[in-house]
Length: 429
Ligand code: NSS
Image (tube, rainbow, N blue to C red; front, side, top):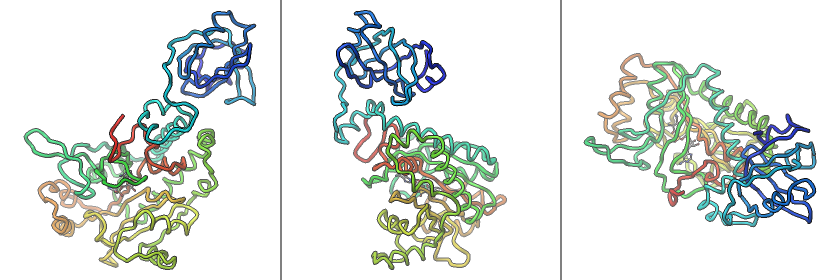
């Protein structure tokens, strides 16, 4: 058996393909079967003069998404999808599909998501999943090649990391309530003290009440954490990382970006250095554009878009008011009102893709923060130990995988960036 994406190696040869009927046209003695096998599409031509009557008849009976085995000769033909065509000699039906719910006509988005298990077979979804996979590989290659160790944090945790309002609870035997992790960061900090540079990569959970196109309740996040990195080192790494992901996809997923009709002009500009502006200066940008905003608030999606329009590549906003940021962020020694935090905002209205910071490494200050945030100190004793036993400056960030996929693919909504999206009003299929 040969895969469609390897046909170039078999021009002039007879091959056997296995797959599904994507669509079909016929005219008299000819039937044109568009076959998909998960690696690509190829047109298979059934000519009445070349095959038995049985084969010609069984080709006629094939419905959309029927599974089939086809043997024929590979011809090079640049005009065809994928650049090849198959001259069919043999055809065996594996399974005739019932009437397929997804047809070439336009379907509403709710209908498509209800049929997500089938929708994934469509050309655009195929392209998105292949880009997602390549982004995941780029992420792992980037860190693996730079001496980072993959470090897997637990998913079941006893407490909150990013704020108590978005926790998913689960009963946990005699120990009461446990929570699904919102971020592996606190554990990654322990990892960095043991291994110097680590990254976590896995699903995280947030009971977000928001119904926006930028929120999922289950999403994947990659979180590098580095001992002896300050905020500037952290930003250097973040921009190198995002440049690497985008440039890798532009180089290696051209066909998929074309299928998605992604205009890549803006992606091509994603090169270091990225602009860096302080939160305070970003507020000034908003004011200059007559966009009502008060210093001290967190930016919403609309604010982020207005700020990012000032720049032609991702922008890093640093030093946010400490009040709106998490308890573990270090305050700026030059100005106690701001935290050594950084968010990276993607261009084209895609919003925040990275959130990170330098961490508070002073035991007493961290204890104060835990009290201010009304967090139960007993649960954080292990985390405080990291400051008791050889505390060092350290930093890290988290990049949301689906937001990155959505931006690079040019999608309208995060729900197409993950195989089976989980949102406030949807946990099926
Ligand atoms: O809340 S974050 O801004 N930061 C953290 O969780 C830190 N603990 C990361 C760290 O420093 N190690 O989330 C990080 C990113 C954010 O920029 C988004 O890209 C993504 O995670 N994110 C989400 N993606 C999809 N859906 C939701 N609900 C979501 N929330 C955050």
